[in-house]
Image (cartoon, rainbow, N blue to C red; front, top):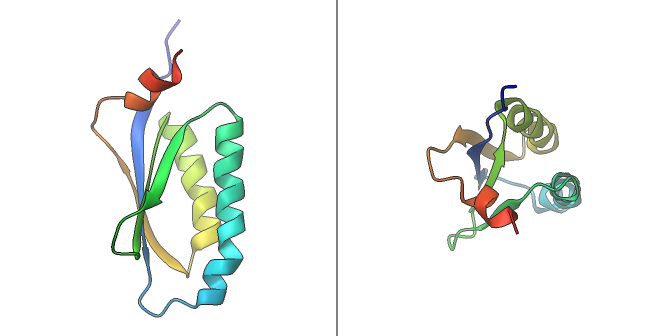
Length: 101
């Protein structure tokens, strides 16, 4: 049996220059629901802002398919409001180590 490989993924998000604060208020609960859904499935995600108050980062482990599916949902929520990109992160799979008790 072959095991499906999970890898670390990173989503970097930056506020657009002319972002409307009401748009941010509108999408914040949707993003939180997406993250809550991810975590309630037993997955771990670390996320938070940088000190510039414009940029944020989320780090999670997933298969390529899972990561693409998560990013598609993220894109549907944030499109036109935020600038964002997802990258496969060539780092030690720390989240899977931490999730094992």
